[in-house]
Amino acid sequence: MAEQGFESLKVWQKAHQLMLDIHKKLLPLLPKDEKYNLADQVRRSSKSVGANIAEGYGRFYYMDNVRFCYNARGSLDETSNHLRVSLDLGYCPKELHQNLRSQADEIRRMLNGYIDWLKTQKAGEKEPGANLHVREIPPEYFVEHNEGIAYQYGFYALTHSFFLFTRSFVLRR
Image (cartoon, rainbow, N blue to C red):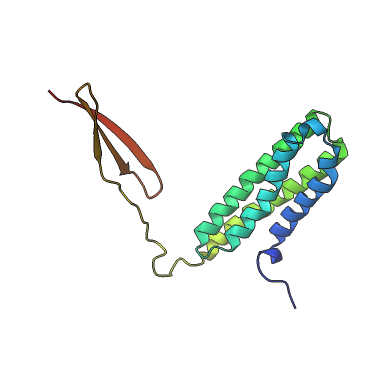
């Protein structure tokens, strides 16, 4: 029986293999004083690539999946940066760096292809409520200070995901 779910995605499999190689081959080479610095950062970012691909796979609406793939790509770039840092600091042999970096480059190409494919498929686009955006605009409130100055606070929605905070001063006499 064929494997199902996110584990069947080739891009996830490659990301998982990169994470394993980093944990098994690179992390043991890092000095103890990097345990909570570089080692922790590369450990987290390499795990985040596959985790974001998996989480996106679990989302129904295609743009949610695409957004998590963007997050995975960002984590992949962060991992590539940590690989470069480990090379430049002399912790990682050049051959190992080249191997890990070529894996990361392949994953990036696969992620970009997967994102393009998701955008053409548009899964969930026709479902009821798929294009609805919910936003909540909190009420305005006033705070009066002893100096006789009242501050008016309010949040106004610019889009469904960004907010602008405004503050105006009103002098009371």
